[in-house]
Image 1 (spheres, rainbow, N blue to C red):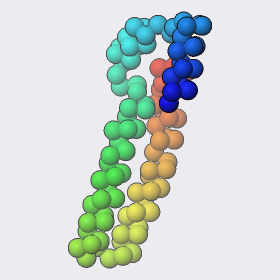
Image 2 (cartoon, rainbow, N blue to C red; image 1 turned 180 degrees about the vertical axis):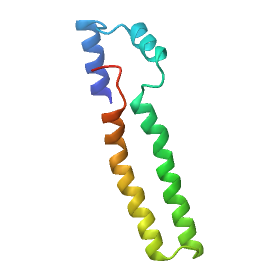
Image 3 (spheres, one colour; image 1 turned 30 degrees about the vertical axis):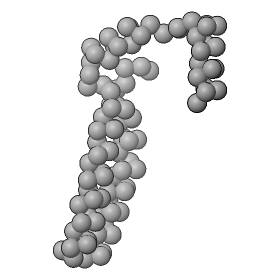
Length: 95
């Protein structure tokens, strides 16, 4: 951490701030629905809750092991394909 902080400070002193932070913030505030990264972080909780609910139902015995296996497989396959779909389909603010 210290070496990265030293490198960060050296780059700021040598090159200055190359990006206008006010312009970046205003760019994000103009269109809050085009934040793919924030959307992915929010939706990642859904996959966690599905896995938790599945494990709870498996421990109670209300799901069979095969049904739990199918739910976990579907959850994991959607978890792997959803971020790629969001990145490809949601238009980004930067090219």
